[in-house]
Amino acid sequence: MKKKPLILVTNDDGIMAPGLRTLIEVMIEIGDVVVVAPDSPQSGMGHAVTISETLYCDEIKVDDGPQKEFKSSGTPADCVKLAVSEILDRKPDLCVSGINHGSNSSINVIYSGTMSAAVEAGVEGIPAIGFSLLDYSWDADFLPLKSYIKQIAENVLKNGLPDGVVLNVNFPKNKTFEGIKICRQARANWVEEFDKRINPQGKVYYWLTGKFVNMDKGEDTDEWALANNYISIVPVQFDLTAHHFIHKLNDWNL
Amino acid sequence: MKKKPLILVTNDDGIMAPGLRTLIEVMIEIGDVVVVAPDSPQSGMGHAVTISETLYCDEIKVDDGPQKEFKSSGTPADCVKLAVSEILDRKPDLCVSGINHGSNSSINVIYSGTMSAAVEAGVEGIPAIGFSLLDYSWDADFLPLKSYIKQIAENVLKNGLPDGVVLNVNFPKNKTFEGIKICRQARANWVEEFDKRINPQGKVYYWLTGKFVNMDKGEDTDEWALANNYISIVPVQFDLTAHHFIHKLNDWNL
Image (cartoon, rainbow over all chains, first blue to last red; front, top):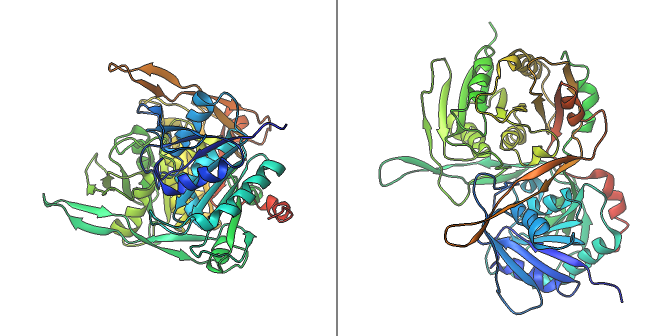
């Protein structure tokens, strides 16, 4: 009998998040599951790593099931590093991150703790997928996503991913989907609108808020797919070189 | 007379860092300078943004000079957002970040607060450059870098950068350089070696340490350039789509 794949599960909403619990439920149908997740929410952490503070990482039992679970004081990227170098005795066959409570489509990928965990796994040579649902609420309905997540994960286990590529999967908020679309990242950004307030001591402080602006009307983008009720999959790379600009840059007076 | 360019300066080592002070010295020769930098070191913060905590941002006078300076409790990416939306009355002509005390070559770009500030500026449509020196010490010698930084910044102001591209500039530790090389990001990673310790209460904790492993022997990489005493410039993009893999992914059973 073929050995079951070893699957590392993590997220950025913390080990108690319902999105993570759903992801674990799907993964225990596919393989041997080890969870290493932050002990508290880490949204917006980008690819932060903890270098000037100490890290804790302790085994924890959250619910019934065959998975082993660990909670860490670190960021999502720290969790992957800890899993690979301290907890697992071999390199996992797959790393899945999420299911994030909220979108990681388009430019959100660069702010995303969920995707930073997937990218960290990819850097370490582990096939990896980040999953996100376009619903920020804690009690979002993750049930309709389960069969798709299983299908995508099984495809990655079967086909592998090229070196340097991980998958960014986003689900629209609706409960039924038109299907899956392979997309490129839409060119969009956040227009900040800081909420400026005065604290009880009379000092000015700010809350970061903002409006998402998509200037990319392409029908091959993740934003288009999601707006049209498709599940979007963007293959994401961490070679950030803008290869198309190297030639031009060589003509500069440098 | 042509109007002087407006230049936003930031970093991730904090507003008192000598690398930032050197960068300010160069920029006041070129334009009107506004500094918005973290009030404390933020290394390894990746592209973190502050969404569940409040932000402070206050004017500060650090040394003589025509620049205006602000310190913020936020991350480097927060500083750029605050500058653009709360402090500056027009979009800057250039954003420079650094000079980082330490390398941001190769895969370090994804962990780098310095580069996240440059990328954040790029996302907001501002030509941007991150500068780093391969010397982690606080009293590193930044003097030999000044003429090169000026030349690179002036070139960006003159030529502009394509939408979606920022520059990642790294300097070798030596005081004289072979010249400048336009490069691609080397495929490398950190192999973690957590330093496991016991605290006075008997609890296990970890320090993240690691060894940088470059498996990319290409002579067109930033690692090669730096090892051969060249200043490396990598054009960096924040469209993370692995375009080369979209076609293949469409053949999957999804």
